Image 1 (cartoon, rainbow, N blue to C red):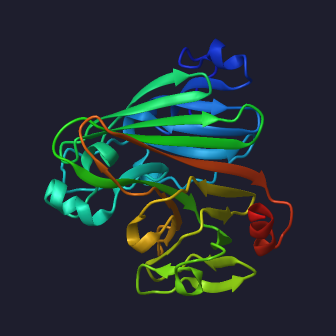
Image 2 (image 1 turned 180 degrees about the vertical axis):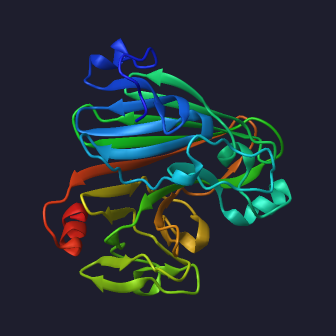
Length: 317
């Protein structure tokens, strides 16, 4: 955690102490002015300098579930709008990606205020409030409420888009969480899915060791191919060596991006061994003054059995 003993950077907020949630100022892998959130069961690390919820782990664990690009420790975003730096962690983008060219004149990298700069952090009772600058292409400011449950091993991130400038734009909230190499990834398929076999292939390659078993779509990271699938189910599970992370999307009525996907999983080939578990909110036509919100909930539990598929089923029951 890179925090020297007795460092003046370390502090616990009295307001959060009352409900057993601590918010501590720390240095983290070369970044200063970071935050460690803890409720005694799980910890989350936030790095405002790069706009990321950078880590999520069980208290006492040496390694967390989120993937972090160790080669970029302590670095900041580049000033070049055509370069994307993949730090890892958790972030959000405007969906669908097809609207990026219209709003910023290019389809990659992501819009700057969503994924290419620092955010302002303010301590709240259960965690932090993170606020981005206004994105010049979309006229949207992102506000993320990063909160721990007072008693359960749960992190809740509510993402809010505030339309403050410019013409109307139709967007949804898209949360991207990069996680370390899993033993398995599973998605709980919708009982009445609009997709054949319950899922939608978004890239040509099929997931590695794909199977559908009793309502679960289960697979591994493909070591050689870029893979992405989507579903209209709202719950996913990442099964790691020591813990399991369940991710739940706040789903409701409306039209969703990518032909109706609520959850998506991307797996990256070697050498960067990570996967992305993504949640999508419904699309809204936003004009100046409008706000939309989408919550994503992360539940972390220790492994209880050596069988990864059984762990996924237990997490998603």
